[in-house]
Structure formats: structure tokens, C-alpha cells
Length: 154
View 1 (cartoon, rainbow, N blue to C red):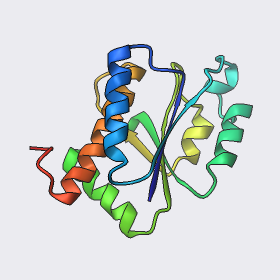
View 2: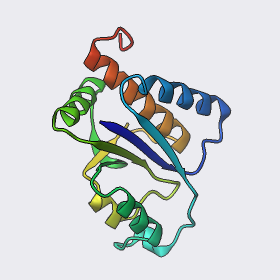
View 3: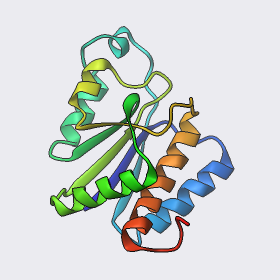
């Protein structure tokens, strides 16, 4: 199973960027990982509307066939153990590519949200995009270590 993380914009904080690179390297011991930074898009009325923007349409076409996990405040919260179990189930089901999508400051449109296979909330707390990206990578790594019985999650 390949892991693909897509987010809009670059992480500004150099310390968080270093953590993201560290966790990305750790994840690659368990599964191939690609982190893709999309150029930041301007907010349009379609962001809030029920129609897909041109950029969202292109992204969906590119991700066709992958399991799309959209980070969204309306998504389901999971404990680290539940997330690890879900990650393991994806691998057992033969999921070829798992794509985690982190929106920009305005998030994704309602139409894009409906195209996601899973809506995932990292926390009920409001996180900056940079922290959310870092936390996502840490939780993916933690999930793999839980599945393998490594001492990291203790």
C-alpha cells in the first residue's frame, strides 16, 4: 500500500518542516510515501459552493482509483489505536494507494468533500495547517508502529 499526502502550500515553520521530514522518512520504513505540496489557490465562490473548482476537478482526476481521506473538522475522530486498526484494514483489503488530503486556509469545497471516501478529523481543536500536517504524519507513523508492535507508541 502506498501512502500519498497532498496539501496546499508550503510549511512555513522550519522546525515543523523538519519534523515532517523526519516522520516522512520514518513512514517510508513501512510503506512508500509521497508528500505533494500543491500551489496555493485563490478563494473563489466555488470554494464555498457545491461545485468543484477546476483545480479540484484536476486533483480528483489525478487521484482516480485511490482511497481519498480528507482531513475535515466534520470528519470522524479516532483514537491512535482505532486509526492504526483502520490503517491495517486498508492494507488487508488490498488498498493500493491511500491519499490523505489537507486543504489550504479555506479548505475544500462541499462538492470535493462529497468525493472523499473518508472524512477524518485529527482533533476537535483548531490546528494550523502546519501543525495538522505534522500531526497527520506522526499519526500515520504511530499507526504503523502500533500494527508492528514497536515500542514507539508507549
